[in-house]
Length: 300
Image (tube, rainbow, N blue to C red; front, side, top):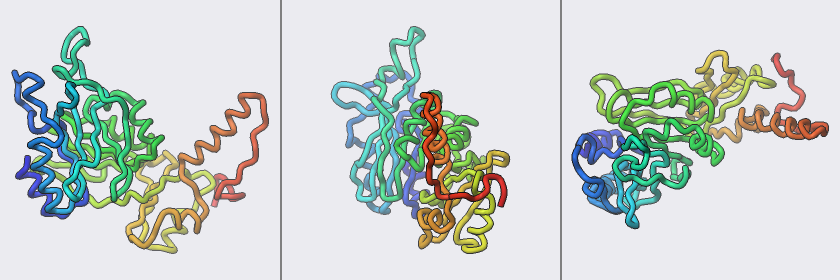
């Protein structure tokens, strides 16, 4: 795996994610004590040297031992080689038929935190976490822009669903099957093939997903004004959602929203929720002042 990481680092990435618990994958018959290491430990130290040498952040999934307990962890190492965050798998899978032991002795992590890196705000879920939508929703509420999913298996359609529902990037790094980069509309924009050990993709975490209501014609106006400096795509036909992603570092989504008067889908939905809550109490909805003002809802 370190040889593979070395080859990946030749591409000068900002951030790399390795697969779930890769140092002990396939090792059977070992007690949990033999599969875990402290933080820092031999694996994280080896990865940290590479992170510092290439000025790259690396997500290093290992099983860890801390305070007398064991965790299935993803250790985040920053560009200096320092540990800047740890996510402990919130939902380890049972390894006993009576649900009293999980992953041979792993303790569930307490929460689904986000981590503010220099590239943007990220979240992490691990393998069986894919079966628990509440944690993915928690990451959206904390405004994660990208969720990494190191895993032992492929994950399939569920990852696309989470990306689409919560409008963040999802990137999987798996031990078997296909690893993918999934955009905030649920489209697979890059994936490993039969001969690929890893994939590389440029993405911009300064993006916004907007709804077509009140915003028909926005995509054309942005294209006319900015050309290929901003990508606007509808990769989920029929969903009425559009992804705006600047390709020019000088262009920000905040500026685009101010210039063209549009809001994120999440805010559009929240405006409805605000009105619904009042109506359910028997009160009239309060007037709101959205960015689209009095533009037609369904026409240009």
